[in-house]
Length: 354
Image (cartoon, rainbow, N blue to C red):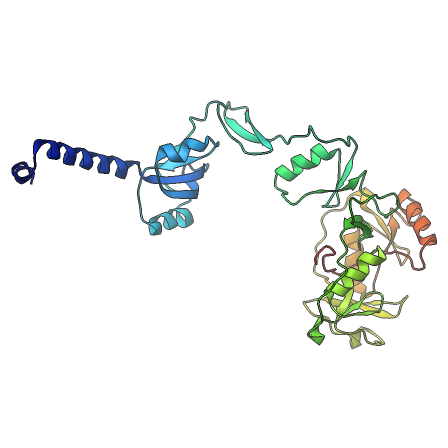
């Protein structure tokens, strides 16, 4: 073939043709696949971009970015990722020995571990944090300070936010919610800051009706959440559909595998899930229930309620023979309210949904 080309091409054109062939071969070798990490099995995992040279792939400097040389069809890439634990012949962009020029992304920094390997660890920027005390997170947990919450957010809770300053409370007293949000006590007697949705869409189906734990019919889940928000404490769903004048749980049909529990105090029934298994209880998890019985935990109380077919509610934490700080706080709140604010064990729709 080259002999024939010599007769038809000038020397300059022949050199250009040879250079072009070399360039195409070089590009073919360099066009591989870029991956976001190298797994413990040594294979490349989480495909970032196919058909990318190693230079382009490794330009970001991110720790874990890797490259494979093979230019293979998408079907092969799919088989590697699904059935083989990643792509073979994985070449890390970083040598893995230092943190030099390693970009871990926002809120993280590179740190050498005990095996002298670089690792990205959570290190949020807390320079703008002005409040130095504890804060209550949107997960209902108290954090030492906002910086500790930001670290928890970095470690796998991207939706975690500060609800309000101070420790998480059991009542809305002394809770200052930011902006236009309102404090609401949920069914487990924990105070949350939520934004009340004051406008609900028009109801288009009778199937949207819900019977609240207060015996009131709500046109939809949105209407119940709005009432909960405006009231400032949990209402909860007794069962789907309009409220009926039931004489016992036999008159109430529960859906979704729930069981009816009879509220003897209010002569109403409520549907609750009864398939929850309880972990081993700690001594500080004991609760006093509405039947004046001490249970090892709230979960144990719920299991007893399901076994009896009767609604049991938390009066206060701790033994029924002791008065805890939570009970004292609760009694003060009850003086200001017509109804006692017990913990109701029925599955609530999320308060914060619009």
